[in-house]
Amino acid sequence: MVTHITEEIPRSVWYGWGDPARARPMGRASLKLLRDELELSSLEPTQPPVDLSEVRLGPVRLEEDVLAELRAICGSGHVSTEAQDRIEHAGGKSTPDLLRRRAGDALDAPDAVVFPATSEEVRRLLELCGRRRLAVVSFGGGTSVVGGVEPLRGRFDGVITVDLRRMDRLLSIDPVSHTATFEAGIRGPAIEAALSVHGFTLGHLPQSHQQATLGGYIATRSAGQASTGYGRADDLVKSVYVETPAGPFDVGTEAPGTAAGPKLLDVLVGSEGILGVITTATVKITPAPRHKAYGAWSFPSFEAGVEALRQLRHEGVRGDMPHVCRLSDSDETATTFKLGGRKTELLGRYLAFRGQKGPALALFVWEGDARETRARKRRSARILRKAGGLVLGPLPGQSWEHGRFSGPYMRDELLTRGVYVETLETAASWTKIGATHASVRQAILQALQENGGGAYVQAHVSHVYSDGASLYFTFLAGREEDGLAQNARVKEAASRAIVAAGATITHHHAVGTDHAPYVTAEIGDLGVRVLRGIKDVLDPQGIMNPGKLIPATAPAATRPPG
Image (cartoon, rainbow, N blue to C red; front, top):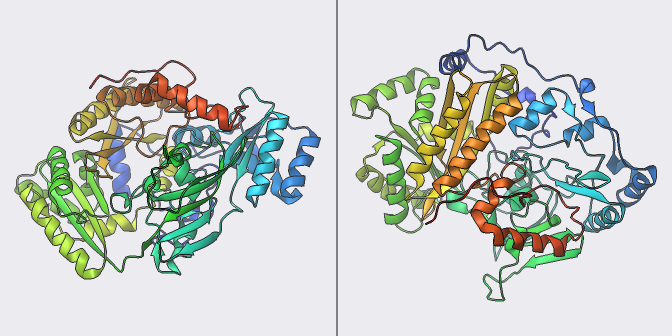
């Protein structure tokens, strides 16, 4: 498995994640745990994806003169209506996306995929699409798990996907001001490789790091494993250059701060491709750390662990927060211990002896200068110990980091073995995070068990703020005959519980199509009208990524007052 953040891997296969040759098969302990928890009699790999030649595609709905115009803009070798290209761009990497493609359904694939090399080419593409009534989907790494890159045709005569992989250069770096400007199609490992030559890092490492692009980070307001230390994508971006149907939009400033009206940059950050195509971006960079200090702690319960994180954030010396801050609930902790072999089994017994019957495991990583990180770790340890934590040493954190990017590969095998698996996330204030965790977990569990059978839900905190933290849920069950209906039922139950708890409908996965029905509950009717007004100005014909972010109907749930 890849462990170095600058090492690039092949682009994901059409039916799953990454390079299948890099996947590790599930061990006997994992399979036994699944059979026991999900009450399954068999986990044989009987549901592999169909062969590429068996995937069903709709016809190309573009006239030959339109294709000729596309080729005139990007070059004949950079416009494709080939089956594999269309299938690879038929959606993102959510479980529903993969279920459809693995079953041979790519009927909603784009009519063509184009690969521009410059902002000028993107500008000309948008002009053509507006003139010929074609919807446009911007595509980076294709890692959306919320329907964010589905090529929805809507009311238009056709749909094209604009893949930015050719726009992947570092354009400039300012080592004095600590900023760098990139083309938006550059993937995570290439960003880090380009910056490492100059002694810098972006520090943005989502689980999709090996596939995702800078433009995708910005368009979805993503967060990475070390965002508690480095900041989220919206904290890191200084400016963006966006090609919109209304014309180029250069937003942001070199100045460290400004009072020149509302921050228009925030109109584009998180806009999910509905306003235009991000082609370049300037971001903040940080000197690459020379040292990492790892720490693992166990707390008597998830609630105790959450309170320890709050105290660490509120009572610690400014700058002492770990860059990586992850707290597993008791279910995720139990899974970690069961699958970790003899050593973690003994660790679980030791913690039970110390009075921690349902412990919550916390992992921390401090980055920077060696002396500085050790001092920060020592000061943090005093707070964690006072909050009831037991120190476990550095190995659990090092082990987790080593396998950080392997999770999506496991989903592919689970789907082949007939297991339904999906994730979702949210964030809540410290006041509400405990109740949010409990209610969302219960909603997911009940929805999974509605038609009988076992189910498993686990969660963790992975991003800590002064006023609250994120929650990330992973859940599994035996896959029903209609896996798409099963997913819709569970996702709706969880989303309603999130809204009812007063949490956000998404912390870092973005809105896409999945969460659009719940946006009104979060930003209000007037907020939705403001979004529509902005889109009407920048995309008057509505060709950009139809059906995403802005709800089309009345809210599916309402937020409680207060």
